[in-house]
Image (cartoon, rainbow, N blue to C red; front, top):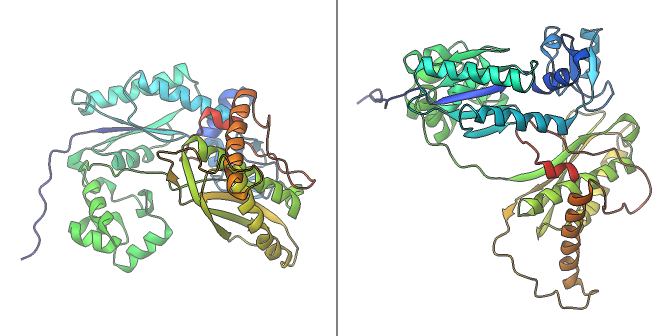
Length: 433
């Protein structure tokens, strides 16, 4: 017998999603009135070889967006203004915006540096009440945080749809997706508008006859899951029809940092010193979050190649800066040899260090080897971990780089500070790493 259409439970409006428009660029325009109304991009270093990490809406009118190379952005807009990022200020504005939203409704999820999701209560989930709430949030951000900080708000029966709704009208939009409009109102959107569908998944779905949202929704849930290649396709089918499913728990899988090197610091030794600084920052975060790692990954991009080179080394479970630096030193000759073999020699554009296979530190006990002779190899990591933690405390009290692990040889590294990833908001203490 053919599978019958599923019966849906009630699907009231349950989620309100706030997405700040062109966040980094808008903060810069708020901080500097001379930038307002002008095409602005935020770029990590003052070099044509880097890319924009944010673009104002004035710049977007010229076809400039996040990821546009600086040289291309300059060509598209001769009046373009380029500013360096002020990551700590972005976190400060983020905290103020979250606090403002809390004045109107509890924040259920902080989704990224510029996005929050809020669950609507029964007395807030009529279309009229939800719209009025959204307008109050918009006005509160504008009046109390800054006139340049506009937002697009989506309201829908589940968080995925509320996020999609927030993207449907930018800038300064307000979109409500009601259950009776679903899924047809989503059909004009491309598949890649859905979080989790990138180029590979889009290609995979096309191979199974799914080229748009309408074709995915036309299938039965089981068939949609089969096209996706797993149970998530079944889950996605229900979400697109407005069912508010329980959310899956998330956990940390990696901790890491990467850095685009300035043109004068792309040689072997400056890149090595920058990698060490990144490793120390990652190790400090590992300890702060009470994790330890079993794998160090060194990843890099050379000037003459867009692909990423990755090499890794297994670790005994650790959160010790010195053990992590020793593993990095063991990996570095492999990257150095690959760089020297290139026609232009060792010219590194990006360097990154990631601590993977991380796990919580639970029920930690004092080391059995702590009482051994200090020069005994078994006692060494006990001492160096204690030293790593002492350095954390000193830097937290006296500021970034009050004390650090010095390089093994001379040379200078690129300046490495705390950076914003859109999906992760650094804690204030990270600006002391």
